[in-house]
Length: 154
Image 1: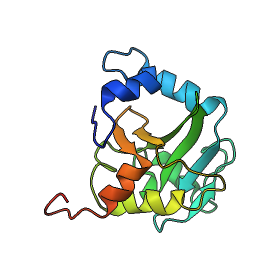
Image 2 (image 1 turned 180 degrees about the horizontal axis):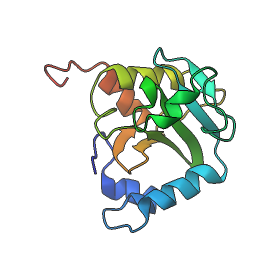
Image 3 (image 1 turned 135 degrees about the horizontal axis):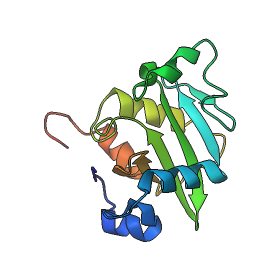
């Protein structure tokens, strides 16, 4: 599991125990939380446009792009995820490859462009993770990462 950004895995585990290294059933725990009462379920087009998936990615894919459901984990270049709030903390879970949001590049830009269009406030300190419990840091970390130079790392 990857951990990047300003939040250590130990601190993240204090907020969301399923992020702990030895936590058994982590994917199920993430799914249970994010499917329980999500603030928002989304698809983000490759160009950064946000699509409201209502209550389900499978039931509400972007119109005309139903085929992306069969292209896991890349989804034809779309990103999908859920925003949830638990114990006062906002969590963004994104279904993606481990390295997708760890460095500057197209997937990171795509995610941030989409999150800017959210119909509710997004906390700068929201924790961003993958569905496999990779930790990408806070939303603020992702914004800072977006503007890092890939060649120099900063």
